[in-house]
Length: 260
Image (cartoon, rainbow, N blue to C red; front, top):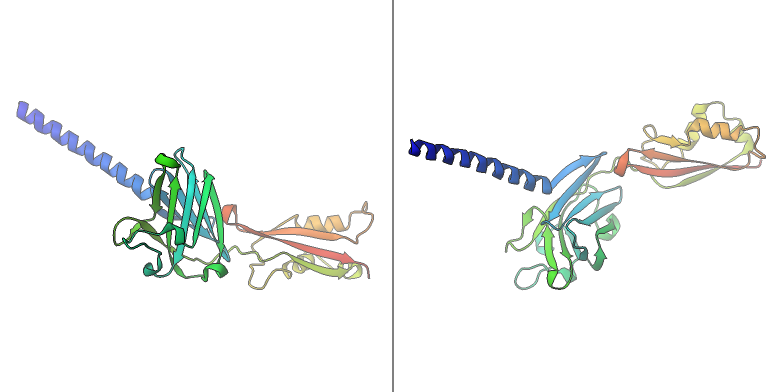
């Protein structure tokens, strides 16, 4: 009787242990992941229990956000971008040399936001990068230096991750201004013709149909035709936005009405 009781308790213990291990494994998986939000692919990795790094790219630059999550602020941050594993700067023992990485700066904050243009990194859309990120949390005897990523160096002492430079579909281009005479604008026959004036200001290749105008085209028309206006000679600006949320992009389009 006692033997069967003992075996039953062991089986119960093992089943509980497996469940706990599965929970831990699930938590680890969620800490290092790649996901999509608002049409942007976001890479998220943890610095142990001290913080997180989030990397995404827009049309022509990469954005890096580092957040301290466990009371100790970020006191140092180093980043390196390369397409070849052998190009990471290392010391003789194979450890990363944080002082010669592409970006290496002292910090004293719980959040760091950085941007790096494609031009300065010498990259373009669809390139595959390797990124090493090392952060120091806290100062003095409490300082802890941790690397982030899901891949491990040959000596097993530091981490890095793969990053794909993805196309940014919500690119809205650059701010534009167009001049038209008062008679030209007055002669525009319809809402659609006014919309075309603004849409045709957009940079080549920009999606001209799926964005949102704010103020709307009707608001611009009503503003132009407002009987209380002292003069129709003015700038009429709208913001054109593609996408939603953090991965949206906007551009200001200005129609300048000038005298004939």
